[in-house]
Length: 249
Length: 271
Image (cartoon, rainbow over all chains, first blue to last red; front, side):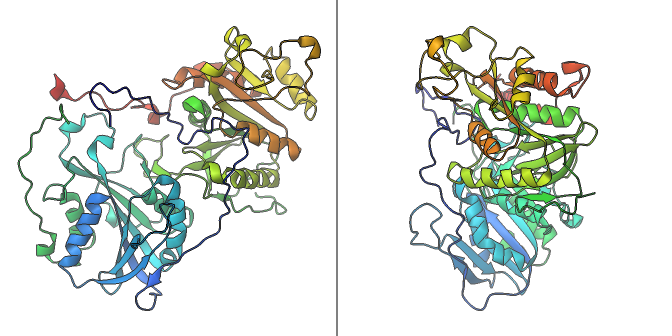
């Protein structure tokens, strides 16, 4: 983020540009796969729906609703997703009901996203469908209307060609908006390997989980997974009054 | 119908059966200004190419959106898609994200295997190159070069040379201010070819040469910014070579995804 008076070099749209294509790739790696999901009990052979939460607000939402339900921890993946051994599990799996599981995915560098996907594929293969809930700051949304004309929290979605249309509780994510990272990696895999999957992108201008920023996720849980959560579990603290101007961040 | 002898590569996942035998493959190198990718967008939308498959590889950084060519379509746009125009015998690979450098070699090797298995007749790699790294001769001339290994594909080299295009100059060293100064001593065996900011273009050319695949690299000198004019320029050159549209640039249409390239309009509350 640029501070007042600081000169910031423009960032290239060509991510990871290789300025010296003549150089040999010094750190070429093979596609060796390491690390698997560590299940608490026996791995489930068939999961109806896997709910994947990605993003800070989504993670807070999942942890909040876990406290109010009889969910149990089902497994974890401890892996070098950040380039060094991790002391804490990176990816956590929870059993939300008999056939619905929740998965908490950390926000990691886009370069590590496909590696994380590789570890989760054995779990995905036993799922009938995948639902990804990703929270993104509202300024990342591009549209004709300035973001201030949109509600403080809103939702868009993407879904695969094999996905059941009854999950369509939000408008499509309009071009040229795109999603990157683990949510994109998972949805790409679903489309290519014909697994029903949908991605809900929840935009919010708040960094804190409250009744407003949680509203899109509450809508998903209430409409798409009706009856999975008790109404009181999906109740969040009201947002404190905040200045509406974003002229001074 | 797919040729029964065609070997299925793991990198390519077809949506329908197609036969690419004898086609020209356009590959954009993710490079400065994203010129190759913008040009591919123009080709796909203007020539109404049909999406026929995806490339899937761990080296391709993941992004996803909706179809950038059809408004309100729920179809997904994946980071590496293959489009096909049967009437023009043209296959266009569109890359919407970068290639991880540490897996680039693996990716390019598998890409070459797939290209060979398809029976592609020639490859055109579209790339940008940094404006600020130009030598004097490049500054004083048209900001466009081509690259082809002429000793392997003399006919292709002659075709491009006959259009008045300039081949990319060799340099004794990089960075350098000028090309090889002493023309009398200059042979194709001296100096090196560099494409600053060109991504994997040079490496792909080398792999195509090693596998006897005719390949030409089209290079547009540019900087980061509004690169639509650069893409139009590149498309014009490509059309001059491949004769895709008789009426030239007038027939090319901007895709809907090119809106908001530079962000949202300013918020009303500022005023």
